Image (cartoon, rainbow, N blue to C red; front, side, top):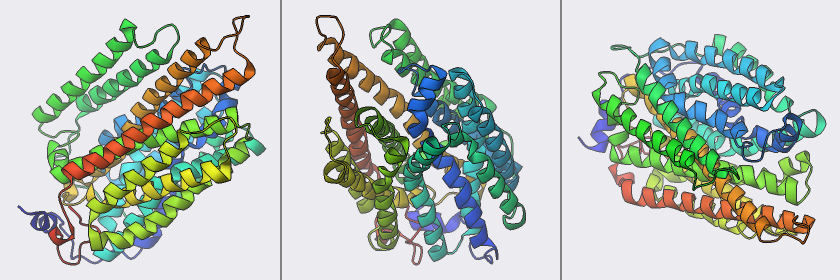
Length: 502
């Protein structure tokens, strides 16, 4: 079946009357989605303060980020199925309540492990909230032009929410406490909950509604094992030569293979392979994973560079991240207008090139890097690239999906970005930590300690290595798009080019 025929065949209810409160519901969905996305980075600004307050080691600091993204990404597929079968509005509301409760636990944490656990719990409830939100959007907006606008809002939030999180984290850390970076979610979640009750309609899939719990457990354990293996490699007494490092990495890869086998054999799989094996949709998911891997690591190390090396206050570091947001907002708007004319492929190849160019520019940081002359233009490039990538990506990844699979397909899109962020952050943290240790070992004084300047130079060297690898991951996303995405605007059904780009 052609892409056009498939897209037309699998949209039951396409001609039905649109929901009268759909735009108000979009506002509620946007609030919840922004909370979930920005929470992946809002703690980045607070990380130096939290690390000192709770006694978290440098090697383990990345768990503040990855505990959230790992639970989020690993459980999103199950969350998508729960949203489909249990009811999308009901799942949305439970996710909002749980997210608020987990944020309260994290904001009151007294130890590093307790903070890690709370972040993981946030991720678990976010895994209910996010796919329910996007599935509701997919069901509410059935007319092509309206859905294009709705996806533009979603794409802007997906691309810019991380940078907004950095700014908000700076304000809260500076004027309140790092703990408010978590506690602030409570009023936001409660607002979304209160608005959802009257404004968001219920919807659910019908038919076979059994859950693939073994698949959910295996994929989450596999991803956690991979991340832990990368974390072991970052520890001075372990490293890449340690047997435990490769044991965890190997176990993680084996569990992911077992997950694929479970999905093939399951009568009602967590991730129907038909969703992923579509060439264009699979390429979109892989692109999302690679961009997420580079993006999350970039924000983490840019934050650490601004505060640890340049001496920015948390508030200054938050404001210094605004150029990314500006770039995303501009390019997301432009991309939503260009998408019907040119199709997704050109935009999804241009985006990674721009983003990687910004990342490569960050590779050349030093102890005296200028914000206006260096950091600002690099971040604008990064933001422009992300907007051009996320808008067509969000649309392409969901085209031609039956309503029965809407939650699973939505979850797969979110999951690939979050899983990429988890693995990318852990890997880049390991690369940066190893480079810092190697630089310090080569610049010791007679007393056996590095000079203060050498200690700062070591951090710059480590962060620069991380930016280089992040650029490579994002460029690889462009290559994936060039190889897998084969559609153009001429392949789209008439009047559907804005959104149905598969």
